Length: 275
Picture 1 (spheres, rainbow, N blue to C red):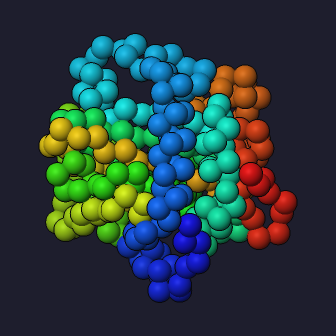
Picture 2 (cartoon, rainbow, N blue to C red):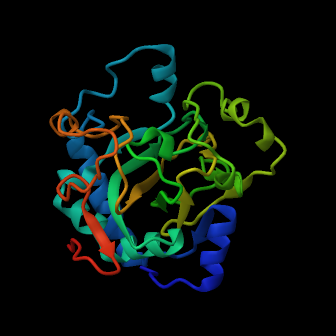
C-alpha cells in the first residue's frame, strides 16, 4: 500500500474534502483484497450485518430501491479473519489520521459495496450523520476492486461541502438530488467524477456530499470501504451499527472507546491494534 502522504495531498484533502490515490494497492495486494472480500461476502450470504436480519426483510418502496443500489455487507472484519487482517492494518489508520489531522483512528464500520449489473445510482448523501458520533473529522476510505468508471458507477464528489455541512442529511432513495433540498446553496457547485482503476482508492470527509452513478453495464463494480472514527468521539444517541447490549450501557456523551467493537488501529502515542 502507498502509506506515505505529501503535504500537498493533505492540503488538497483539507480544502476539498477528498483525495484520490492512484495505484494504492500493488497487483498482489489487490488480488488479496478481492479474494478476501469475495469470500467474506459469500459467507455472509443475505445478511448485511453478521448478527443482523436478512437484507430483503423490508419491502417498502424506499428499501426496494435501496436494495438495487448496491449489495451492502457491513463489518466483514468482525467475522472473517482475512478481512480482519486487512482492515486493522495500522497503515490505513495512519493515512486516515494524517489526512484528517487527528491523533488516532478507530474503525467505525467497514462495508463491501457491490454495484451489480444495471444497479441504481447512489444518491447524494453525507456519511457521518448516519453514525453514532458526530465529528467534522470523520473520514472514509473507498478502495476500487474493479475499475470504477462513469459507466459502471464511479464516485462523484461535491468539493468543499464538508466545510459548510451541518449534520442534516437525506436518505439514499429514489430522489438522487434530495440532499440539495437540504443544502440548496450547494446546487451550483460543479460535481467531480472520480473514476478509478482497480487498486486505486479515495478518502473523503464524513460530511462531504458524495454519491455514485448507476451501473449501466452488464458487469459488476466491487468496492471495499471503511468509515473511521477519530479517537475520543462520544455517543450522540444514534444506534446505527452498535449492538443493543452495548447501547444499553451508553448515555449521550459517553466516549466510544470499546476496543472490541471499534478497535483503535493507529495512534500517535497510545498502543493500538495490529494484525
